[in-house]
Image (tube, rainbow, N blue to C red):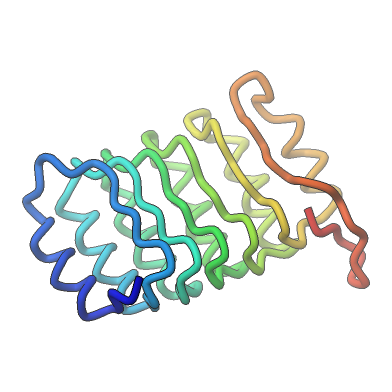
Length: 176
């Protein structure tokens, strides 16, 4: 549970030519944006990996942007778990830009992050053009009620949207 960025860099380097490992779980490993950058490089070279879980690490918008850049061309990753990282609106927006062109990512967990109205508006816009995403978890973020209503209207036969219980915030949005 204490791999850190340096340990991850070594693992990511060795996995560049991997053809067998499909799931990489790095939950609670004290990873930062430097580690996410190494994972972005890995995803540029490796289409075998289908699931990446980074829950409970210190990955911010900068690190998520590194991963998002790789997902523009990566055709292997289907599941990305970023629960309880430090993803804000900028990182969410970068991921949403990718969702417009990526046709392989089917599950995205952004629960327990720092996503507000700006990020939720980006998600709403991305869902208009993405029919591949089937599982989106946004629990315990601050999304706008208007975005939430629109999201619930998209591809509901295909998209599982997890939002949890709504709690009114002081800022006029909802924690979902």
